[in-house]
Length: 126
Image 1: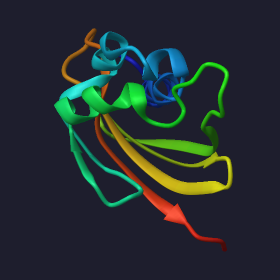
Image 2: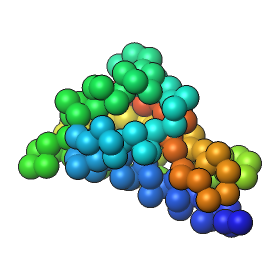
Image 3: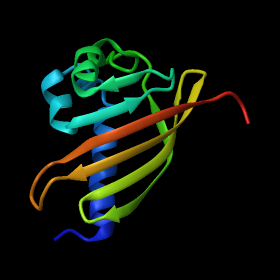
């Protein structure tokens, strides 16, 4: 069984993969990282489902190999229960900043870690 720090590290690795342009533009790769029960409340306030996110992700910002990318900072995680990790961090994309919260789960030992829930909240200047 993975230790708490290994589980948090696995969730962080998955979160960072989702910011990679190659993953963002590949529905197959993104589908491996999103839980079938995935829900997101985006920084815009829109609620996204698994199917909606897979359909839209290739066209969303941060997907161009030669374009701007999300810059993550302050990423930290806590193990809520075995196989369930909560991450918090901030992103910058150009002049846009957001505080983010993600919940990653692993259905059983040996299964892939998948993003279950994500929320982004715009930061309008502190």
